[in-house]
Length: 542
Ligand code: CFM
Image (cartoon, rainbow, N blue to C red; front, side, top):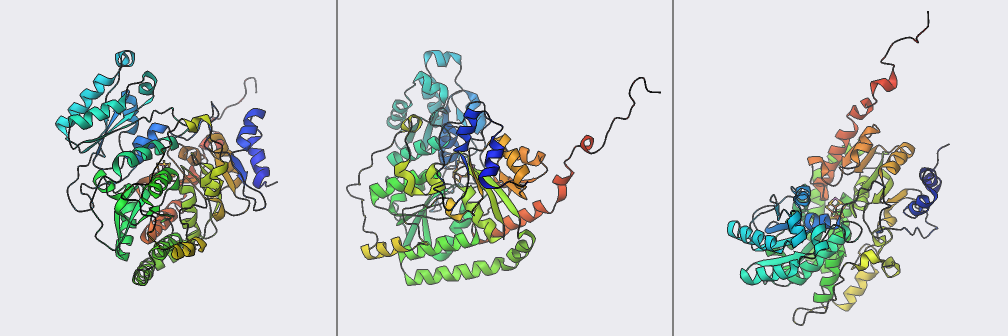
């Protein structure tokens, strides 16, 4: 008998003990339009279960701070923590800022204080100061971040006092400390919040480089994986929209200082950076709209929403021209890929926003998503921001500082658009003004949602749902491949990309067709599972 929906969920989870079953049941559900579909998310993983999640330090140092090109990051902790984040998640960078001037690029570097046992016993502050002095003598960065890892939090080195010392010691240096010890919160999501707080406290609002064009935006939650951000900027620039800063792919400290001078914030990855969007709304009165540049239809909807916000007929006309031209360029290719992919199914399990975004690109290609889940999303990423007031704040979340933001005396401007126009935008269902509806509305009835999916559940759902492709990460892709199925990494894109906007959609179609029509994974069954490899007879037989 083929099971579906919650029956399938119950069958997969029934192998657990009663306690684990009760816990996991709150994280896995099947979309039912009649039910509330409330999910449990952003809580601790059950000890012993192999999760795909990362830590707070990964979210702060690796995800949000990592792509900033001119930011030299000193990891204050044992060398292992640095080794783990040495290298990038394919966030590409260049050595110029948005005004074409040279900006340092430290993206490939990893500085570490290499804490040893005596430093843990007697404190590591001296070692950290020395590391700053060395870094300043050799590289002279304009921005220097200190990221502390678990042992430093436990022994209590005052990294914030040291950052202050460095700012005084080296005039012109922006040195910022991030208390992003791995144990904070329950996942890397805590690190996103900690990084966002310091970005608002120390960076945004300190520059005075005004945008040159009539319409200007920041792109928040876009990290330029595989060049995604460059493609988005190419499209926006074609439309006549200036990008003041991106946070934090394709960007640097020098650009981000000016972010408050843009007209509008675009939020691509809601999970990692909604904090900055909210704080900039409170501090500068700047609106944000939720966009998605993954998928042809999603991109069209997003740029039209930007046009609607600015409410300028010339801009809207230019946007339509760009859409027509870009669509025309990829039309034949998309038609071909659609013919190869139509009717195929997918499962997607990634961090905190792509499991939603990529469903729309798959829809463009005629595919449907039978399972989607997040490693560290919060309830609002699944169910929409309307549930935020109902989310119980537990001890793990209370641990993360919530900045109290006041309107900036000189720069606060809530009247960037007229009240009438605001009312129009709020009534327009195609525009998410200062809002995000979450992943649910784009999912089909009966499809499975799984929060904090683990290896065991991955295997079981794959057996039952048999998707044609599983979009996964580096840790779970082996489970998928061993099951004889195609896996495409949707974090790093398996050395491909960009996948954004129009040309990116065609490139994604190409890579997917290539993966699906190479029959490599059907040869995966070990020979001894198909035929006996030992030939012999039982002892005593004549
Ligand atoms: Fe945002 Fe990201 Fe994601 Fe994320 Fe990430 Fe990433 Fe991701 Mo990997 S910021 S939540 S912490 S879109 S690294 S660029 S792919 S898990 S879905």
